[in-house]
Each structure stands twice: as C-alpha cells, then as structure tokens.
Image (tube, rainbow, N blue to C red; front, top):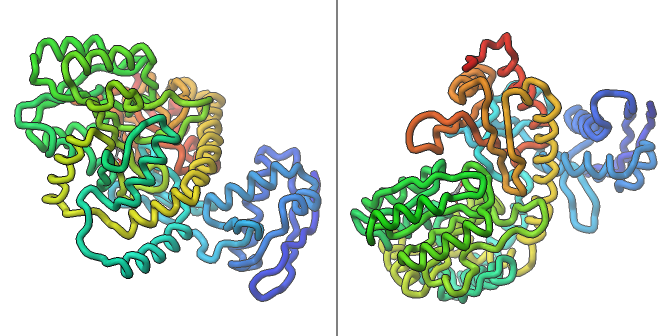
Length: 495
Ligand SMILES: Cc1ncc(COP(=O)(O)O)c(C=O)c1O
C-alpha cells in the first residue's frame, strides 16, 4: 500500500492543485483503474477544473511510486473516455467539454458512460463493432473543414464531379496503393455515402432485375437488401472456418448459367463470424470469378484493424483480376460512422456507370468534408489515428477475451475463436438461445443483437460483441451483466 499527496499543476486560474491519492497494491481493483477513478472523482468534485494541466507521466509515476506504464495506461483510458485531452507537445489537460452520460439511441447503436455509478444507470448497447468516436480526431477534422470551406469558397462552391472531390479521390488512390497493395488511379475511385451507399450504388448501376448475387451466409444483411433494391436475387453461400465455401459458390455458378453476376464477400474479417478467408479459398474464388465472369464485390470494412502481424492483401490487389473487382471501403470504422464517407475502387468502365447513377441519386457528395479528409490523410493524421486506435482496440479485445476466459459462467456459455483483428468477437452460445440471452440482457438494460440478424431465416445460437467502443472498465461492467444473465438461477433456458 502506498499513498501520496500529488501536485496537479495549474488550472485555468493558475492555481496549483494537490490531491491525496493512495494506490492500494493489494486491492482487487488494478492500480490503473484506481488511478483513473481517483482522477475522475477530482474532476467531478470540481477540484480539477476543465483546462487544468496534469503533471507529466514520469513525475506522476514517481510521486505515486508506481510504474510509469500504470500512469500512461490510466491517462490513456481517460483520454479515450473524454475526461482528459492530450495536447501535442504540451502534455495532458482536463477536457474542456467533459463527458456527459449518454443513453443508447433509438437504434441502440451507441452508449457512453464513464464513472461506474453513471454506467449502471444507462442502457448500454453492445454494437456489432463500431469504433470509439470519443477518440476520433474531431478537432483536427473541424479545423480542416473550416480551411476546406474557405479554400473552396475562393475557387467556387458550385456543382462538382459526381464521382466526388478529385483531390480526395487522388489522395485515396495513393493511400490504398501504399497501404493495401492496390494499384489504382483517381479515375478508378468513386466517393459514396459510406459503404452502404457504395453497395446500393453498385446494385443500381450494375445489376438488372433477375440477376443473381451470391453472398456469404451468415452475412451482412443490409448488403443483401441493397442488391434486392435493384430487383436482383440473393443466393446464400455458407461460411466455415476458412471463409466462403467456394465449392458451393462454384456449384451455384454452374447451376445459374450466366445469371450469377457477382459475389459479395468480406474476406478480411468475415461479417459476422470474423473469420479471415484462407489463401486457398482466395485463389479458388479468383478462378471461379474469372471463368464465370463474376464481379467480386469486396467489402473491406475494417482493413486497419489487424492485431497479429500483417494482414493478407485485399483480393482487389490482384492485378490480373482487377477489372472484375469492385472494392468497397469507408471511414466508418476508421474514424466514425456518422461521417458517411465511403468509396468504390473499380475498373473505369464501372466507374463511369456508377458516376452517372450517382449524379441522378444525389448529384455529388459533401465536397467540404471530402476535401478536409483529403488533408487529414495527406498530413498523416488519419494514419496516426489508425495506429492509436489499433493499439487501444487490441488492448480492449485482449481485456474482453480475458474476462470471457476467467469468469466460469461466461466460459461455460460462450465460445469464441479469437479474431486476428477487427472490432468485434463472434460469440457462439452453449446451453442458451440467443433470443433468451437478448431478452435477459434487455431486462438488465443491456442491448444485444441476436445472431438471427445475420441469417436469412431462423435463429443462430451466437451474437456479435463489438468491443472497440467500450473502455476496459465498461467491458468489465458488460461482462458483469452477461454473467448475471447466464447464472443458473437466472433461469436461462437450457437445451
Ligand atoms: C460488413 C459491413 N459492410 C458495410 C457496412 C456499412 O458501413 P458504412 O457505415 O460505411 O455504410 C458495415 C457497417 O457496420 C459493415 O459491418
């Protein structure tokens, strides 16, 4: 047990601040958590004011007699939660806009809670894998948007290219060529309203009524709905531990004799199972698409998030196949879904058709946002954010995996193949149906989406647990609730 009085340096009023803090080495609560809670309490009591700067991590570690890693981890969590702000080259200060309690929205896609007491009071939503918008580089984006608006006002804010801002298309081409092994030019890029906009645009521009699209099953149902928007049919192809069952795809291609136009895949981390498509399946898929002249609609929704070594390159990085590849990605997982900025990379003839349909749908995108994002990529801000986010989400994934492995009720009921990356785990259920678990969780103010949301019909004994948007404390609290839902006396239906 160690305790100390620590100088928190000046606040906006220039007053030095002291707080008494005793970190208990023997306590069951990790010292990192003790420290972050103590700082939150100081802020909530109003003793640490917005704008007050904290001593450097070395100073704080020496004063508290703890390893500097403990301080760095606690401060990192508080920055992620929005209590503190890291200022480049100026240290860390108390955030000017402190986090407030937010309840999940109507779709249950978001929850923000920080202090344990607050967290208990709110409805917490476990998403299917969204990033933590609290760490998004919003200040940098806001400044870049202001600059973009001024610059565009000078050069004219009129109608522009339906394929999107030429500057961002050029920057994105460089970005994916460098980071993802593609070899495209700006003329092969169309900007869209997120990946969903890209899927619908592809469907409306490239599919005819009666065409068939093969899609992974279980899979991303909003993509199936986009294909049906163009009156195309969807055939489901099962997924196993190596990804799409390409033998089944081949059988469909033979049976459908020319009606099968495209195959929709998420090879990096299959949605929802998180499985990475094996190299053999990728090769087989390429051969099938060449011989049956299929488009490969490759939805690369979370490429940045690989935690173990380098990821396999996208299928669209294959040069001899590139004319049949329609590569779809967005900033939703990289920065935040609300930006609604995605892109398609495809052959020029495809881009021409996509652009002419986009012109009819919404004329063009948000050119101010597009130009601002181009600046953030050129300055390396997006790449820096991706590195920080990757590190943080990896810690959160590891924390969740540890919770699942060390709590007996969770071990007994939930099985998972740890994914090499991504923002979610796919948890298979034993002894309880997904619907029953969802019902029990709902009664405890926790919303989960049952696996059936990703199935063509029927129930799936699994659910997707998006971990990235929750701090380690929040993940522990969610596991507390899950544990309560799965305890025998909770009456969960056994099968
Ligand atoms: C597999 C997959 N594709 C596409 C999307 C849509 O993303 P966007 O927000 O870019 O439209 C999502 C969103 O969750 C997704 O999981």
